[in-house]
Length: 505
Image (cartoon, rainbow, N blue to C red; front, side):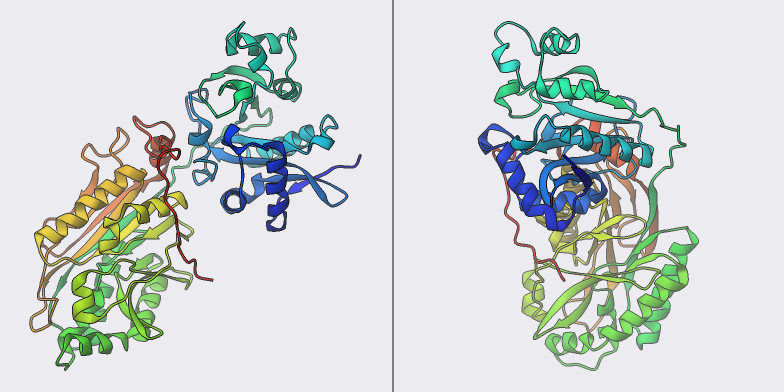
């Protein structure tokens, strides 16, 4: 039969889910059960690694894969949930060295007709094209349950490899050039394999040794002093100065603090905080023009802290990320403090997303948002490399709430968090009288990072700029094989969260 293998598309999602349900009719017996959300995530994370086998327009086979970095210990122990980020592939590493086969499904009516071999061939071609060192899979021991009382899984796999026993899955992988390396215990829920898997490896014969390119970015955080100004031009001069400084230090991104544009209130002739915030929203276009121009002129990403912006009949506190190519990404503050509601009538937004930029995958959590673990976890699960955290706090207690939570989010999610805050005073501007900050960039706590999990921090309450490099290779190594692996070791059988995020169209 003329089976064709191609890259999966969004139009194939329903067919892939149906095929998976057919291959795993009892969800309680396997972790590798897909729903639409899973397959959408696969295509978004690594579209070119998802294949389908088609006959007469019908999807009869599918193969899921991602790229991971196995580094110097490619045969280390791992679990299916850990290596696939609970089946979502959020941990796909485009700079990795190994194509990892997550699963292969073949319709029961089309088995033993070469469909799986064609899917493996497509993966091998992808390995060659991406110049990956190997393909690895955790193979089911389909016949082990019947032999478990007589031998260990290691003995079973060796007997299959020696031709003394037959196994439909292990035998297929051996026939396709894979080599048995070891048994992975407690790898996946699978009664047939007694929760074991055979770690199988195919080495790419066309692999060319490559010089490892360090993947990193440089980030500057502006600890900005609020002071009275006379007009918008005075504000623009100060902002331009700090972007110039960051560019001079080779920064890829510069982060300003939350409510940066509140400084404009210092020259507004208004009588109430409500009137002040309403007037501040009228500067949205001028703020956009300023920051777009700075990002383009200095060729770096600029996060403008936040600017109160009118959205329909509400006012949202919105952070904007301006890129050198003219693109602008918006992230509203989600959680609004009692003061913001009482003094200014600000409302919370409802969208949260990771922004794909040429340098990094970026998430933004504004001030109070960092105090909610589920928000940072969502961004990490969506593949963010770094969370930018502009903040504005009036006293040390408020600052420490933000700081402690920012550092906790970095450890929990094995991610970088860069925080930038305001200092100084705005006389005669209600709810902005005093500021307290000690801006910092936090990392996970492991051997690859600074000993205290702080890459850099400013002196408290002093206007300055701090700059540091974020090493994403070190981050990926910590995620895959750190001293502890909080992302891989979650217990979704005990704890899950439900997300109602609205993604802007």
